[in-house]
Length: 218
Ligand SMILES: C[S@@+](CC[C@H](N)C(=O)[O-])C[C@H]1O[C@@H](n2cnc3c(N)ncnc32)[C@H](O)[C@@H]1O
Image 1: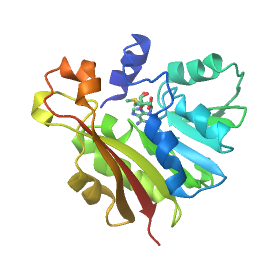
Image 2: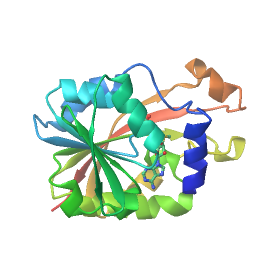
Image 3: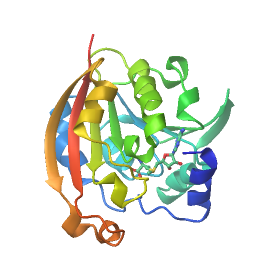
Image 4: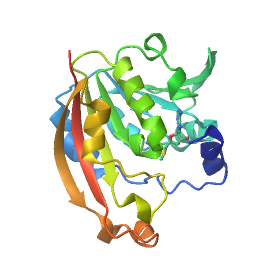
């Protein structure tokens, strides 16, 4: 997906992916990661309110997001006034235990990101087209130290019935993307089509949401 696609989505407020409520799988399955503190990385974070929930659990939150509109709305909507600095290819926003790097995930490195104790990926891997997902998985793998867990929430549906994003990412693909460097456990799967009218309207006949725990190997 080209950067312009996402800048346009935010400019036009076509952000159907944004959830007002905290993601129920996050609240239910985060404890399965077994992390009790430190910094959580949220790649392609948008202005997700899930970051608020993570902060409320005592974590510091580090996000990366292409859209400055999204980053500014996150802080404004949550009553925070961030300190802004320019760092290499990024504009860095910090306030209240949140650091959001505004720029391209693929320009992020260890030195900028710092040490991470867990990752939360909701609507991020599935936001990317097939030809970018390998690069995305390799980038995340590279940014993490051994034993770091990730909570990954992905969709599966007949890809020919709808154009992404969100794209369908099957369990086989999750293994192909992450299996070499991470242990992968499927924690939960659920058929969610009946409550997703916006996807029914697009003609989908099947929509399964899957929750995985990935653990970076040594
Ligand atoms: C489908 S949205 C999901 C946002 C968030 N995870 C959520 O649950 O609301 C994907 C987000 O990724 C951002 N994005 C896309 N490509 C990116 C990149 N290369 N680097 C950083 N952010 C990116 C987009 O601007 C968009 O806000």
